[in-house]
Length: 373
Image (cartoon, rainbow, N blue to C red; front, side, top):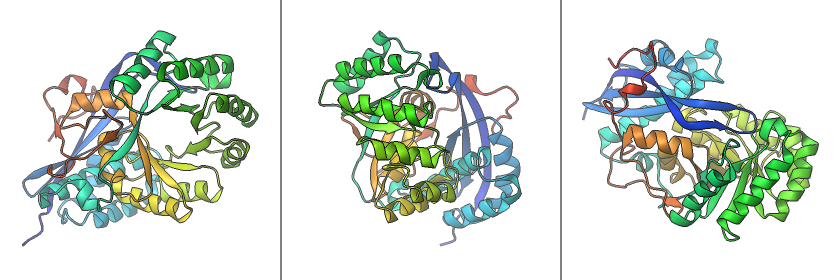
């Protein structure tokens, strides 16, 4: 049988406002941009996306698309290699890697649809389900809003792991951080695992001192206590606490993750499939982590990440991020349900099992972004 060729690759960006102002320890925002990619091949369409700037759209249309169009869609790693080589002079980290990731995800989706199988199966499924944790708890939330969100996850949806943001105002509000952690612990009870994310807001000394107090509240996960670029600082905090120290969400290529692992900086390596280079690079990152006896955790973009999560031997869990849950539910039919604290990609649904609600989301299209071709 002749292998279907890629007929076209296109992209469009959408800006989705938040319901209320949101912030973490080091950044505030009132909207999130999602760049959606479509790959056409063999009479089917594959979907991919990344949470990045609308500048990803011309990168996909003008730079990446010509590198893969006309080639067999089922040879996804070969298409990824062609893109990787073609972007050499643009620089891999940042928006270029986000665009590459979105195309790679769409290529895997298209290839799986052509073959009539889920992406998780095509990647080599090893787990039936993927564990997850509810993630949000923005520093802009008051106690009532924070408690309501945590109660929904822990008690209504029965998710046994939750995470909130701390490190407010670049570490200048430590007592409020700790008060919010106490509020979170009271809201979820003693049997739910509590995680925190400082988004690099603390200094090393601050992070060590905060970690001592977090241990008293049975916090299990301390994400980016210091900048993820400070590998020595992460390792120092890790050595000073029994809480798992984690980072990696800003990794855009394999060497980044290799450096983090070699530095002994983390107990669990976070990987964002919409930034790292897609499913193709994810598998190489997971292998680097496995060689050091580390597990990996998926950062955000949960309806894509779930498929590679169940196909990764050394997988811990994935982040069920409140913003992306809201966006992906609005943009796609076929999204997964986090109730119970695990998700199971449908073994009978080809590809990612998602369909873009094109007409419903048209109102979010960014000004100046060309329409679908």
